[in-house]
Amino acid sequence: MIRSTLIGGALLLAALLTHGAQAQTSDLVSKSALRVCADPANMPFSNKAGEGYENKIAELFADKLGLPLQYTWFPMATGFIRRTLRENRCDVVIGYAQGHELVLNSNHYYVSTHVLIVDPKGPLADVKTLADPALKDARLGVVAGSPVATHAAKNGLIGKAKPYNLMVDRRVENPAGDMLADLRAGETDGALMWGPVGGYLATQGGREMKVIPLTAEKNVPKLFYRITMGVRQGELVWKRKLNSLIRRNQDEIDAILREYGVPLVDEYGEPLTAEAQ
Image 1 (cartoon, one colour):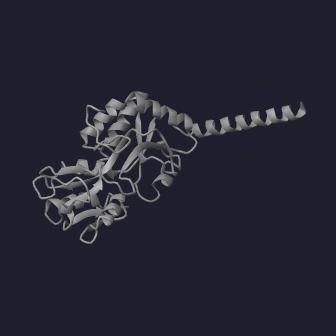
Image 2 (image 1 turned 30 degrees about the vertical axis):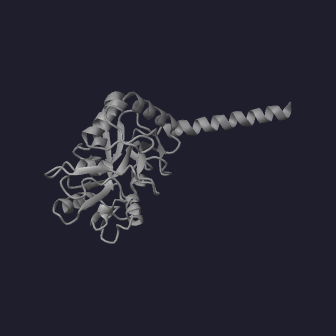
Image 3 (image 1 turned 90 degrees about the vertical axis):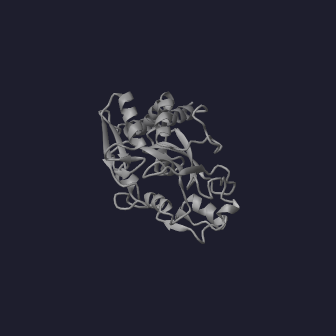
């Protein structure tokens, strides 16, 4: 009897402590505004002018919550989460890869893939995979250290590749934009990059380029990733609220993503059509 009472008391205490910890963590989330952590110069994701698709999704959620939208701006490079979310200056990162330990991930709201961008009238227009012999002598732009760079190396394409930096402050450096500019100028034959960036940039700055989703690659690492919203570890109530917003507004989110040229794929990396979404 005494042992049962002690065990029951211990379980109750543990439950109360857990509840208290969750409540305390949830209290960090603002009740008066949707506070978003974002990069001030990172198109097509976000910028201070509110022109990115993550800006548009943040506006949608703020409207659904009936709250004003507030931003904490910081370059999405080393220290981003520490200087924003962890310092409690904001409550959500609108776009974050699933599974990263720095944040608690919401359910994913889209899946995208890396792409190859080429001249639609050039000799690489019909390429579907990095193993295509047509790429053997091609000079490709590639972001150093990215997953698609690993695939390029495995296919023997790195020797002639032109590298671009991965972690940068987009206020002063724009590797993806430089990669597309070099492609348009004929300095390279193709550009390998993350699809949401490539899909958007391919329509900017002159004649539209062809975007080829790399969905046929079999090597590791995988080239398609689930994108979630990131919140502080332990904020389960806030995560559930975001999950509900994502679920109830998925059609509007998809429409925003399609407007920005984001190549959407399913859970297995297969391309999605607008009808399938």
